[in-house]
Amino acid sequence: MTVPVTPTLLYLDNITVSFDGFRALNALSLAIDHAEMRAIIGPNGAGKTTMMDVITGKTQPNEGTALFEGTHDLTALDETAIAELGIGRKFQTPTIFEMHTVEDNLLLALKNRRGPLATLLSRGVNQDMVRIDALLERVRLTAQRHRRAGELSHGQKQWLEIGMLLAQEPKLLLIDEPAAGMTDQETADTADLLRDIARSKAVIVVEHDMTFVRDLGVKVTCLHEGSVLAEGSLDAVSANERVVEVYLGR
Ligand SMILES: Nc1ncnc2c1ncn2[C@@H]1O[C@H](COP(=O)(O)OP(=O)(O)OP(=O)(O)O)[C@@H](O)[C@H]1O
Image (cartoon, rainbow, N blue to C red; front, side, top):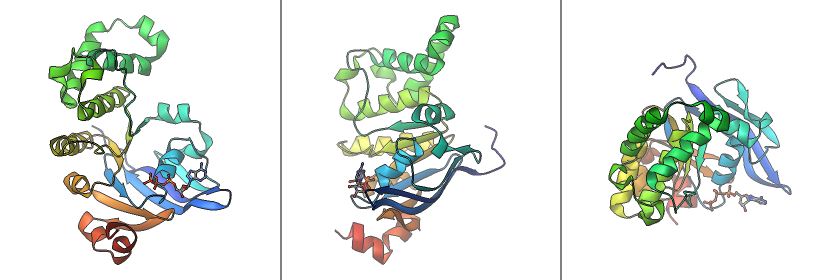
């Protein structure tokens, strides 16, 4: 992989989002490097979802700068344009096609990326299969290839959706509470999978499960009342008195 000269992939500065005068984000600043994974923690209502909404163009900030790759002004783009820049988002509830096989779900995600014209012109059925082999292996679903997605375990469904996002070849993945509802083993496997993905892509994970965050072993940002309260290693953030007061000590 060629590493770009500027390390900052996502740059948020002084972002404010007001809902009827209430500041869901309050001068929030955050920078994510290429191939960096960052865990975002913080109490309910801290602004984590609103931050993801700003990055993906779902919500327009009232103030502030949001740059992707140093040049793309995210505040001037709609959700489709932002997805096309290479920002993929996974919500907590998987949006897979339950009646289709695992393989077909991935195939649909690949075609979705190319669009109808490219799909028509594509001679690449074999190439698709090579890509799908690699995706299946990556998301640990090779043995489930021909099963209907609806039959997968909760954790496997989450991984399939991550695979569908990877099919779109994003540069930045936003993932909302991936460990919610997972068994301990699935949670550990998911941390492993995300660490693997983060070797070549940037990943932002919002998560409340501190065991999982510890497994990720990455820099942590704690949000509170729409701003960054603390940032650093999980040990440093966990030792922060304010973080204990507003979040961990609850
Ligand atoms: N569309 C909206 N209209 C009014 N208030 C909103 C809207 N969206 C979010 N808020 C408020 O903004 C604040 C931040 O919400 P947000 O969902 O971003 O928090 P969060 O950190 O994701 O919380 P959680 O951990 O519960 O998901 C909350 O007080 C919420 O009620």
